Amino acid sequence: MIIDSNQLKKLVIDSGLVPAPDLDEIEQKSIKENRSLGETLVNSGKISADDYRRMQAYILGIPFIDISSQKLEFAVLSLIPEPIARKHNIISFRKRDDSLEVAMLDTADLSAINFVQKKTGLKILPRLTTTESMKSALIQYQKSLKADFGDIIQQEVSTLKGRGGAGMAHAAGEMVSGVGTVDDTSGEDLRKLAEDLPVVRIIDTLLKHAILQGASDIHIEQMENEVVIRYRIDGMLHDAMVLPKNIGPSVTARIKVLANLKLDEKRLPQDGRFKIESNGENVSFRVSVLPTYYGEKTVMRLLRENMTGFTLEHLGFHGRNLELIHEATGYSEGLILTTGPTGSGKTTTLYTLLDILNQPDVNISTVEDPVEYQMNRVNQTQVKPDIGLTFASGLRSLLRQDPDIIMVGEIRDNETASLAINASLTGHLVLSTLHTNSSAGAIPRLIDMKCEPFLLVSTIRIIIAQRLVRELGSSKERYILTKEQLESLRKYTDLDMVLKSLKDEHVVADDVDWSSIYFYKPVPDKESEDGYKGRVGIHEVLKVSSSIKEMIMKGVASDQIQEQARKEGMLTMFEDGIFKAVQGHTSIEEILRVASSE
Image 1 (cartoon, rainbow, N blue to C red):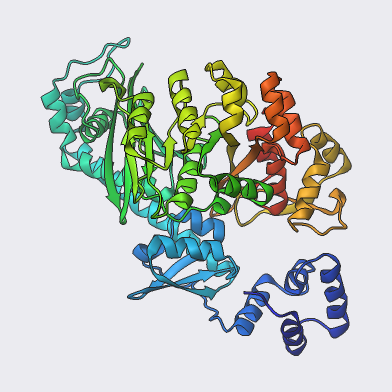
Image 2 (image 1 turned 90 degrees about the vertical axis):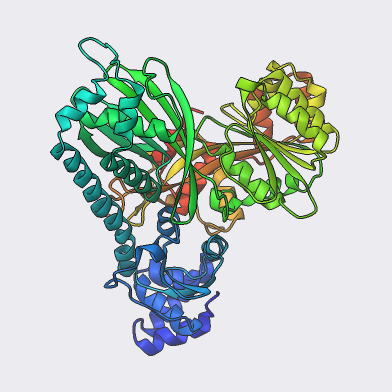
């Protein structure tokens, strides 16, 4: 939805907000900086962002609404996940039979509209609103979560105390008595505790709370005098609540029942899994229980199984990286690899690629551990090593199922690597992950797995390396780096290459340099205590070009491969982070925290 500059200019003059001579000067500035007239008016401080939105609404014929005083129905509000709502400033506030009205700050954000439409299956009716109105609506997520759920949990804890918390602790037995002595409470006693109604309510509420907070993990830690519950949100751990010590055994027992684990086994680690449905969303919990000094620590990883609505752009891919990925997915055979540590978003990237490739004329099969998302028309196989179903044996069986596209959750050993390479040589497009620190590092890792270099150059199309960085909240503050700060930054990156990419993708004007480019820093507010909310990927995409193939055949070091890839236009993860910092997605400090050591 592009605003005609002549219409906007006439409306600004008619409104008397900006004198005509000043408006002419601003118009010339907008042309010089290759920015829209509206953006230049706002940046110059001549009109407020909200006044500009009102003008947009008038010109485009879009309703302008104020939801700051409305109490939004949580069932409607939660149709858009909180991280998406905050990232794109989009709120669902009214649902009809087949349509959903959404309040936005930027109705030109088509990726957000498409995401919501794909997720809800409803016709989306965009409405413009004010910044304050958006902030007020976003706060309602927090009110619903912290006030309602916190009160419910404390109420159930009080119920347990009222019914004799000391007696319950005695029945459960202390997880540690004296110096690390494990209790001998029978499984039957623990099962009774696990099925106690207040305990059931506490766990149910705790899980729903975590889902709505957008947590990726729940940590339940038995301390000497209390039970600490923490959520990992946007990659960082946050204290969620503290429960009395005597509640701990019952909580652990309840989770063990849900995950079908042995209740009376407290000396050995256990792993399990269970699934719940919340707000129409299927969420799988991967459970790990580990004995510690004061009792058992439980960690649950949340895996949202309905993987829909993600796009490569949503994940942070742009420009050359986006073009290389689309080019690689256009082949009918070959190997596409994603690399990075645990929790860097590799699997999400692969699923997004599968979603793009998932067409009626192809057969897609996967071998995974675990199956993290469920996808329509994709045949997904869960690895079960205890009965002999490994990545290698599963992949070998898949090849007899006539697939066109194969996804292998992880290449861990020589056998899996060899099978994946052979599959890509025999007319299959294979997607997989590998644990390396950089894209170029995948080559020596595969060679270390006894893969022949001539097979690697024949099969690998691209290698994607990635990390996740926290995104800035809405109250960010902009600033310009000093000469000293720029020189310090040059130690980590090629700023000239980043600047060229920024200009090529029209993020900044062609005639600017680093002395006039803004960066952003976090500002804590009600929405985010540390000024960050959500995460976005930083990437490097290495194309195995002819020159790089020659280097692989000669057995050169990964550093030289990376240097050649950079000469051919590849931005490193750190440089991609600087690119996103200029866009206002994240801060330089966050990029340094995550990627400076790579």
